[in-house]
Image (cartoon, rainbow, N blue to C red; front, side):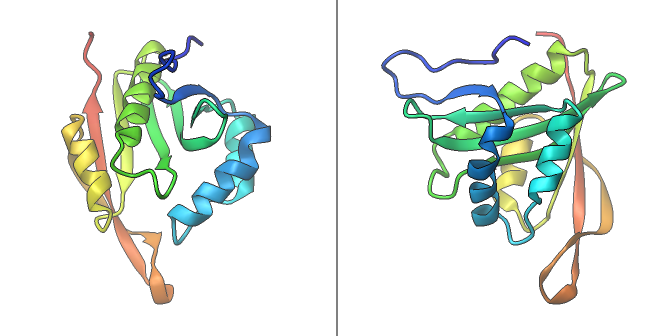
Length: 163
């Protein structure tokens, strides 16, 4: 699989590369900081072993800045996880990772991409809407929430048009 982008020499922009099992400690450190109900190491490991498209963003020094997980099958892709490291928000990292994941989906023949997002995650919703996703439904009580509660999921989708 070709690399969706590489760091431009001297620009300080992050590079993107496939996630490896050796990245899981750094990925988990970000995941645990970013989410009140994080994925487990086992979920990430299972996705790696299932050959999902899993990519990390890294600085020149190798530090992880974020990651994305994408499942692709039968002309459809599902964005399962997209995360920028806390403290690195509002730097365009989420947008860059999302665009890379969309290029990966398109390169594998996906015609559309789906995702779920918490209604309380307004920054993520804004990112997805700016990128061309539209709300197509809701999944009631999809996510765990505080005090043993549940939060709906907004289901979003976008058609991948030819470049």
